[in-house]
Length: 123
Image 1 (cartoon, one colour):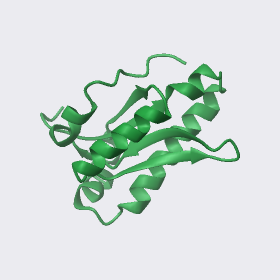
Image 2: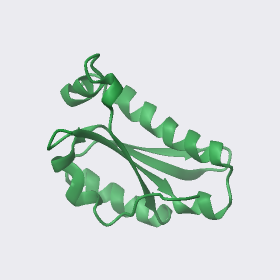
Image 3: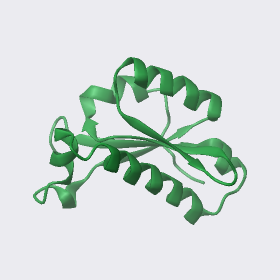
């Protein structure tokens, strides 16, 4: 594995886990956020590299847990301040922020902003 790989980080809102959303629905929320942020940043050079034919079978994604919508708001402010691109996915009609996906970045670019969030280990 390369020393500083391109990684896409996704944070899943613990509130939907606590509400016992079905596994498939939780995974769908993370997928929606990933696709949306990549679509919104498809001209970005790092995104292009992440999606290039030579690397398409070696994508790195890390799924983290974020406590609640208040923490999503805090993270959003931090990411905005650092000029990092991300997408907050809101599910309707529930109107709940379910996931945050950062566009793919080199790991060293974003790791300091995400180190406090634990891996999502179980639903």
